[in-house]
Image (tube, rainbow, N blue to C red; front, side, top):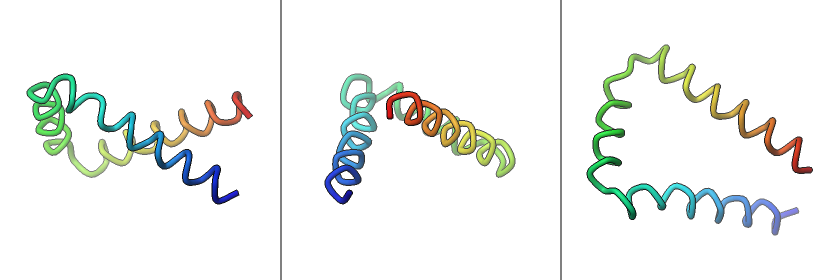
Length: 61
């Protein structure tokens, strides 16, 4: 179980690192725009990401 968790965490780090590596200016702009969202919009974005991830995980597993 811990191996699966650590493997998933490693993949998150790899995926999170792709955009700033490939396009630092675009990443900076995206972070700037995200920082301007109000709490409600940011929570909705987070919920959408969690639901998409859970759906993908259920399809893969």
